[in-house]
Structures are given as structure tokens and as C-alpha cells.
Length: 399
Image (cartoon, rainbow, N blue to C red; front, top):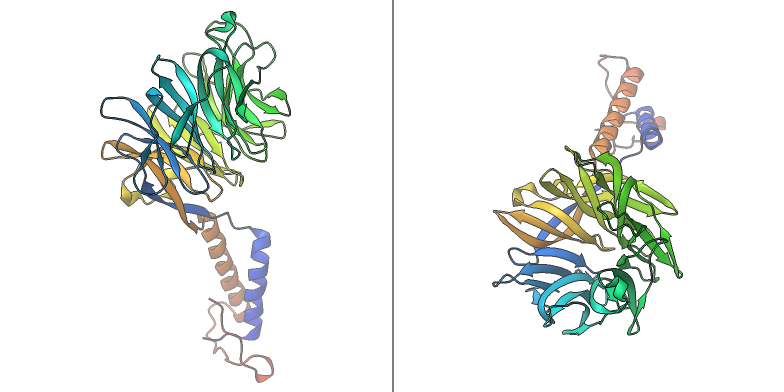
């Protein structure tokens, strides 16, 4: 079918002006789901190779860590008791904690099939939480100070040396959760020595030897869980909203350039949220809670999305939490179906236009149709010539 040249010009003008009038909404990425752990497992981290770190409970009820590099999950072993997997680097180093034969929790590094006890800051215990590409590990450990026997201090383990990075002003405990490839650290620190039930703690950013208080969203507490290579921190913080108990409802936050932003929730009664990870693209993953219901989320392009809406519903999965996202947009998540929960890897498959995109497209077609009616006369029966100006063939309507 052909249309006159002046009709085509109307179509062309409409096509050029539509993006100016109403930009299309960003497309939402869809994900496939792959099981990477046994029944009863949960995912903890994912590296750039798509390898997934997770946890499970063995046949005697002990907590174990595993690494799945493709195929069957590999048990990390232990220092004698339970093992808690913390984080996985792009270089395949694992950080975590394991109970030794004396019953003491110890931070460990795991690489090339071997687990190594990282020791303490002079006390009895330590725990590993994060690791960067260089293999630097962060966590918390007790000191040798008898007045601090029950208090932990954030540490950075680099080149075989464990270093106490201190606390925020007036604090007496701290915990390092994550470290980026520039050596910046986030976690939490108390901001008071009050040992009562309202013992407040705040998220921190440790950079260049200085620990900065990130504040809260109006409540008493905040904690940083992840930091990307741009220095952006995510975690959760007490908000102005309160539970009936009077404690602030926690909301996921993003901290960039001195500003803490509330990322919101997935809705529901007394809804809360926690952000667990951020990649270098600025995409954030975590969990949203409302009562006893827990759902994984993805935050991108300024919108908090329920990850369950981005997978095939026919597969039957309910994604409860998303723990990590790499720069290839692969996600380490935990999901349940048929009464069992599993560690999962979500792989991006395609981008689907948002409803707003379709609305803009339909609006454009309506504008073209209206313009054509104005040009030909409403309801007029006309014969459309197949020739353009000067007898040239008119360009076909682009579909």
C-alpha cells in the first residue's frame, strides 16, 4: 500500500516530534532462573564470572558454605564447626567465618580449595563479611582489651595484616561489611557507649583513613551493606515511620555524594526494605518486607521493582531476596517453590518495553491518523494515488 507524499511527511513529522513530546520509558529487563544450590540453600554473592556463593544446612543440621562455578555446588569445608559464607571476589576468593574446634568464630579466606584462619585483633573471635578483587577482606573482630571483650571492631585484612579501623566518634563497636576495589569500606558503627536497648548505630564510609557517619533516614539505626567502585553505598536505615513497638521501620537507602536517599518499599502494611548490593551500573538489589511476606527487588532507573514480575510466572518461583548483582546484571537470589527454597542465579534475557512505551506508540499512531483525516476530509471516500511528486513513486508506509 502507498500513500501520497504529503501524508508521508505527516508521518515523518509525527515520528520526529513524538520523542520530544513524551520520551519512552526505559525497558525492563527480563530474567531466566537457574538453580545453583540444593534444597534449603540460599545465595550470598555472585562474581563477574557468574559463579555463585551460597549457604545450606547439611544432614546433621550444620551450616555450610558452597561455591557453584557451573555444575554441582562445591562445599567450602570448615575450621571445625559451622561455616558462614560472606562474599566472593572476581578473583574467586571467598570471605566468611567458621567456628573452630575450640568453639570460636574466626574470619577466613578461601582460595584454590584451601580455607585459612585470619586470626583476630587480639581477642577470641572474628568474622569476615566482604572481599574485593585484590583479595582484601573486611569484617569485625574482638580486641585484646579486657574492657572490650564483648565488643567487635571493624577490620581490613590486606597483605596478611589485620588492621583495626576504629569507630565513629563516641562509638564503642563497629563492623565492616564491604570493600570496593579502591579500598573504600562500608559497614556500621555505634555512635554512643550507651549499652541500653536504644544503643544507636549508623552506617559509615571509610575512605583515605577517615570514617564518615552516613546518618539515617530519621530513625536511630542504619547499616551499609555494599559499596561499588564509584563509592556509592547501599544498605538500610531507620525511617520516620514506626512499628507499633515504636522502632523505626527500615527502608533501603542509596548514599551518593553526601546524600542519603530513601529507595522506598514494595508496598503493603508496615512495609520495609533492605538494599544488599549495588553494581557499577548503579543497579541495586535487595528485599522488601510487609508483615511475613518477603520479596526480592531490583532498583534501576529510579524505580523499585518486584523481581517476581521480571521472571516467567509459569516457573512457579517466589523470589524472596536478591543478595548480589554483578556488572553483567546477573543476580544471586533465593527463591522458593513447592515448599522448598533454593539458591538461584538470575540471568538477563531481554528487555521488554514498559507500558508507557506502548502508550506513546499508540498516541503517535492516533496523531498520524488524525492528521491524515484532517488532510483528506473526515469520512471522505478518496482514491489514494500511488505516485508522489512529479510522478515519482511514493515511499511505502514504514512499519
